[in-house]
Image (tube, rainbow over the protein chains, first blue to last red):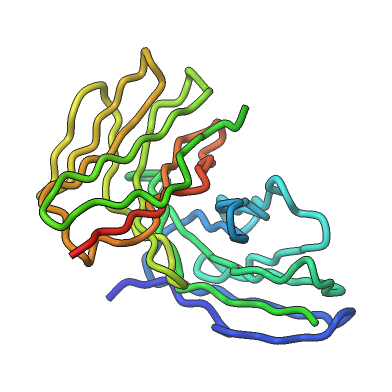
Length: 114
Length: 110
C-alpha cells in the first residue's frame, strides 16, 4: 500500500542534543509537510516543501531545519533540542496534480526532550 | 479570533444517535474544507472533504458547508463507540496550506 512512514516512532533526548526525524512516502506525492501537535493547540505547520528545490517556513520554524533529499524523503532536524519542543510530530503529503489540499499523514513521532 | 474555531468538547452522544460537530472559519476566500478523525495517540485521518455549499454524504457521515455564514459541520448518523475520537476541521489557506482547528473530542456512550 502507498504509505507515509516516519522514523523513529518514539524518541527521548536531552536538552542541547541534535536530533533528526525522518519521513518517507510511497504515495508519489510531490508536496510534503512537517507539523507538531501539542495538547489543546492543534496542528501547527513547521515547514513545507512543494518539490525538492522548494522549501518554505511555516508558522513555527524557529529552532527547526529541514532537508528534502528526494521527492519521497523529507527530514526534520532540531539543531539543539529544548524541553518545549516536546510534542507529537507528524509528516504529511499531498498531490498537487489531483487534490492539492488533501493531506495524508504518517503515524507520527513522539519526541520527549528532558 | 482564531482562523478556524471548534468547540473543544467533550461532546457526549448516546450510541445510535446523531453526532453534530461544528467549525467556523474567518477567511471568506477559503474554498476547500476537510474533516479529519484522530484517535488518541494516532495520526489524523481524512474522512470528508467538501468544496461547494450544501451537503455531501458518505456513508454515515454528512458534511455541510455554508460559505455565507462561514461554517462547516459534520454529522455522524447512527453513532458507534468506534466513532469516539477527536475531529479536526481544516480549511485551505493561500499557497496550499491548511489551517487547523484545535479539534472537538467526541465520546459515544454505549
